[in-house]
Length: 288
Image: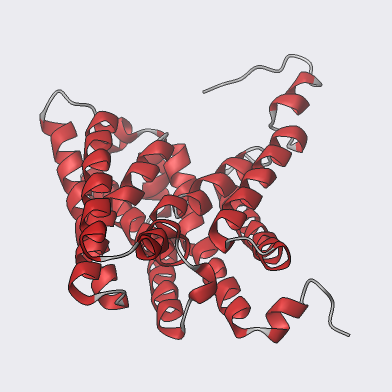
């Protein structure tokens, strides 16, 4: 007899594809979320997740729920917002967070309006909240390609991304690669948000980036173990969320993100770097 934890993945292909998609996102998007957290740009990730919406909406308007069209549109829109927001922050008195917030509001409004011109409320929900249980082979190949690109890029530029996350001013003084590190990271962010968009939607994609990273930070402090721990938390939360979705008959995307949130709250309570553990330590103090 098949174990209850394995039965849905043994019996149903859509559950296996959903799990494979979540594994790809855990390996590609979650490490990017770790660097977002280290750069203190977690909310910027949420803003960028909405930046891809108008491009995906234009792709939908032209070709319907077409994987190539919506992917290309999302990539172009996300990269455009990243470049424009960065340019505004570098050449005006507007800070980067305010610049991203303005583009986020414009992008979200434009994307919803464009989808509403042609699609139904079901199509809008599909774009905003994703359909992890409806991943097909073409989408899985796309997720695998984006994940492979992210893993290779992070492996090759790990030290550069770490220094840029911890002290970008120092990197700018000692190296000419500072702009490459900044914009290269923003490209990786957009790529992984587009990948997450296909599985979890624009509103949920950033969840698998930030929540595992925040939970892992309460257990480990060094970057290497932090990346591995975050990936493990992301995949564990995805697995539990999919099972919860299957047995309780809930939408898969919100179930996964809520499970990741529960793991974060558990880490707050039990993690050795969490506030509760800190109270038991003599001389504990928080540092930025």
